[in-house]
Image 1 (cartoon, rainbow, N blue to C red):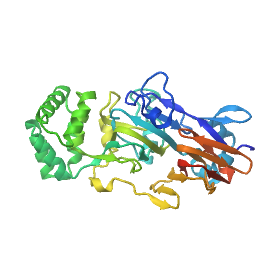
Image 2: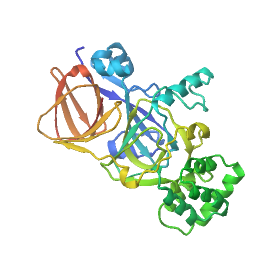
Image 3: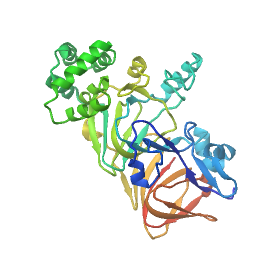
Length: 393
């Protein structure tokens, strides 16, 4: 192969929770239709595969390029272990909350995918839980103040918040949780499986009882009620930690972690999967039984939710406990920096203008532009003032 580094043309997802101008304001990516611009996908996922801009052949699907030259593109180690590009890299911009969700373990994803295939459920069916046989660990890196819910609060904190809300219908379930601290799963299941009349009644009482409260998590409940007025997810801020990441902070979410992104712009890096099991704040399919079997009910303190970076010269490396991806932020300057390529990479220019030089090629990335760098590149130099986000294996 004569070319080993390609600029990317990426798929934009217009989900209804997306911001109209968040990605445009950050990266100058136009939005001529003024639809919600929720995500930009960089990778080979079949629901949004990137195109590479080839000097000789024009635009080619990235998955086709890798399929035709797997060892050169990925390297033997990645190809033998994964068989494909194992990660999906996104720019995400939320104007309102995404669904409360969990992702299955790799084992459960394989079992669930095979089972639904056997049942003959089409991949695009609205009641399909498993779109692929892969897990979906993910890292979110904040580009703006980024608010989220994730992981269960301490049991005492959950009990205290529900007692403050003081809904008479919930006295008995909360009493059971008090007497058995291991019954959080049962309490969670109770809320998810309420009949429609019971659910609407409880939500009405919740909103009345918190009307005079002006602190968290009640502010978040009120905010969510504007978009999801009759959704059981309105109770989740009482159960889950609420965290706001500052720009430059990151958070890793392993399988079976309940979470919801509430608003803000960030970079999301994940295993190449689209498996989502939902619990609320959504009009999409909810399979309560499957969700409960794929949720970790352990409490996690708020001060343990962030992923601390390791500083390596001009790089901020965010360690994650999975093999599917690695992530770092790079500060580039006018000096020439050497970079060895040990796996396929996708690099996104966050700010400025950076030039990449290989043995035989040169490519310039400006803010909002991205590139795929093949394993066969071997090494390259980068220079120019700016910031880069790099995803690799």
